[in-house]
Length: 147
Image 1 (tube, rainbow, N blue to C red):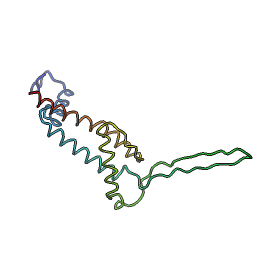
Image 2 (image 1 turned 30 degrees about the horizontal axis):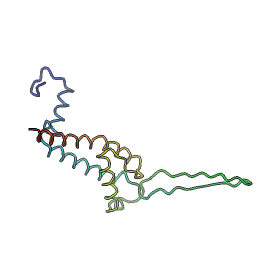
Image 3 (image 1 turned 180 degrees about the vertical axis):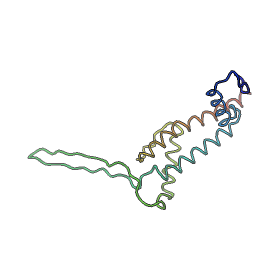
Image 4 (image 1 turned 90 degrees about the horizontal axis):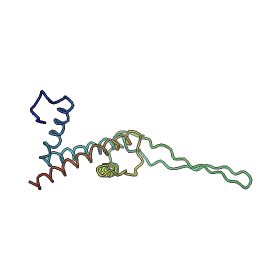
C-alpha cells in the first residue's frame, strides 16, 4: 500500500496511516513518539490533579450489632469524592500521586490509588494510549538499530 495512492486506499486506512505518521513518522522518528508519550503523560497528570484524585482518602467505617452472644459487623468504604476549592487541587503531594498513576499506566499497571469516577476513566484511557506510544518509540529505536 502506497501512502500517496488516493484511489486504492479507503478513508479508514488513510486515517490510520496519517495517525501513524503523526505519532511516529512511519516508525522512523523515535523522538516524535517519545515526545507524544511525554505530552500524554503530562496531560494525564494534569487531568488527574484536577478531576481524578479525591480530596482525601476515604476511611472505611465498621458498624455492628450485638444480639446475645452474636456480633454482626459490616465494613463499608465510601466512594472517593472530589471536594474543595480549585486552589486545593494544586499541591506537590497531588502532583506526586498523579505522576505515580501516570507512570504506572505506561506499563499496564494499576496504581492502587483511590480515584474518583473521572479519575478511573482517565487512568483507563491512559493505560490504553500511553503503552501504545511507548511501543511505537521502542519499535522506531529498534528499526534505527537494525539499519
